[in-house]
Image (cartoon, rainbow, N blue to C red; front, side):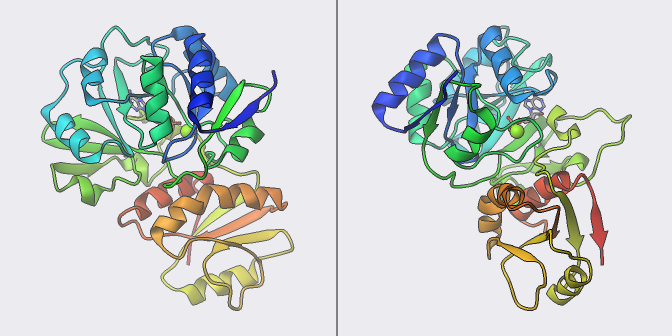
Length: 334
Ligand code: AMP
Ligand code: MG
């Protein structure tokens, strides 16, 4: 199958809607990362998503909707708090898990009786959902395990000849996947951190952060969010997360432990004797650039990548969560 890349304009949305209505899957831009979309109410479309990504069937998909009212078509007992949070954070990077109605096939929810919802903040994708008239199930449009795609070119590399169409909406503004929350007694629990931070949510309710966000799960432990149990976001190179309290310590460590194939992601360059991939000076820029820098390191033939661990405050928690998985939990404490 030839994979076409079309700029996001009304005519290409018509083409995407045609494919989607005919049970095909296409890649779509969102503000978080590019999604691999199919009709979320069609078991056969959803199966194509799992196949193209090589995604384990028990890792549920997020349903992308274009208006808050759609929740009532696909979720039972929509919590009051969900509506409050939707009004504040949608369209945006907040995904909320609720009990699913039978209108949603078990293939979409990975066999669970709950399903995740998000309204993406991208005008093209919102228009596309409206044109289709059904919610789009859309995980990140990468091969399972690789860094998520933040531009159409990344999607093409992973999905060429597997899907008919990529809608090119430019660079993703956020660059990390959405915050995933579930509702508990008196508030919410964060299963995956994203641009909607614990600090932002705590203005509305009590917020707890699931242990799996910053730690590996033991084999016996059941994952609240099935996606969190898989190695994830990893380039081919070995990634090491370096936890230390000063830039100097990090530089000394890198200089003593680097060879020709060692790269670091860094916003500073002084005194470093390894290859440097530029990486944001601010936590938001780190989020935007993380996945593309990891992919770039692979393109340049990196064998080893060192990254200084970010602070776990604000969006830093999301960057830390992706990095520790990219590093397969290899953390070096200095
Ligand atoms: P992705 O679409 O690749 O960004 O991944 C979606 C994330 O949401 C994965 O980590 C899933 O495990 C999580 N998720 C989706 N639906 C549910 C659900 N019903 N219960 C728990 N986690 C979910
Ligand atoms: Mg993903």
